[in-house]
Image 1 (tube, rainbow, N blue to C red):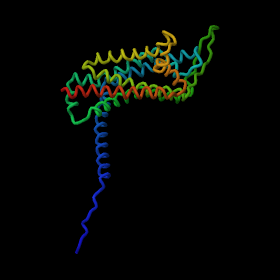
Image 2 (image 1 turned 45 degrees about the vertical axis):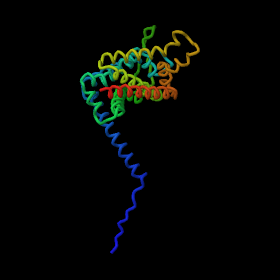
Image 3 (image 1 turned 180 degrees about the horizontal axis):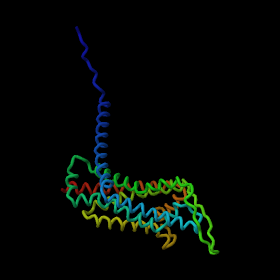
Image 4 (image 1 turned 60 degrees about the vertical axis):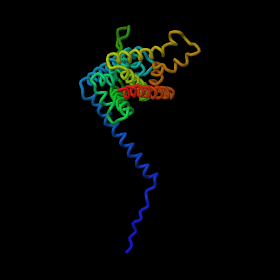
Length: 286
């Protein structure tokens, strides 16, 4: 009795596809483990909750200041006045050093970075895990803004006039303003979180990393204000292009522009690539 034991071998392309899929999911699994570990470092320690509490308090002060401002200033939306306030500027500049200064500097100070770099994980996995965790925490900070579109009318404001009488003023809120504001916050945050991680990767001191990141943030802010100081000149369009104050003004009016999308995504990728080279240098010199 003859039995047919001939088995046609699987095509090479199919076996290669399975191997690529297996390696890909293994890569994502390791990246996910690093991401969750880093995210817990923000949400499961008092430091993270202190940052959340302080930023929510500042956002409350921003909203209160906006409601008072809009009783005398009209023509712009709620989100424009919030992002044009001094409270927002201080919060936006100093929040990134607080979030990112611990990413690599603390690991270096505690001596755990050496063990992490010698583990069977790639530098890209380590970097992306830390980056996405910091970026997720940054987005969580602005979650209270998600409540604003549900406020069809933000309070009835009573304005004291020069005649000694109170007038009732109702401030409405537009969904397009919120969407534009949250979009530009997400775009700029993607780049500035990467910039903060870059600063943290060049030193073992969290304070130095925070100061370095703050200085770069302030420098970038004033580069966008160059045209206000020296007027228009041949290179002025470049400074208009990178000005986050102009971008905030445009997006908070509901006008979505694709140029900041290209700017911040490209600078984020370049900054992360530079950070990877620096971490690789430290990894292979140990």
